[in-house]
Image 1 (spheres, rainbow, N blue to C red):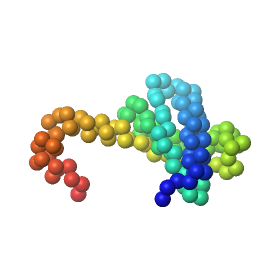
Image 2 (image 1 turned 120 degrees about the horizontal axis):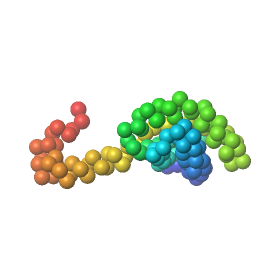
Image 3 (image 1 turned 135 degrees about the vertical axis):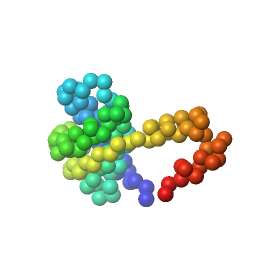
Length: 131
């Protein structure tokens, strides 16, 4: 089912403000050299839950950073509610996920360039199948 205009609008408002909140929290927390970008925000039909997909660079710090973000979800939600109080009546609950689509694309690209190219060596396809 496709998103309604209202869902898209709320998602874009949350996405824009979440970037500011998360980047400010990272710099105030003393984390230099970390880039957090909000790649997608999907809002449920009843507008009660927003699924937030984050791209974190460097990738090796993504797991610990997402755990910290999840543990601070109430504070992040409160900060967002303060920023969007003139635009949203109710702040949806936030759920954070790691968006690893860029890493996935990079792995595919590397395997096509390297020795594990399934197009040139079809025997590799069996080991790549999900079981």
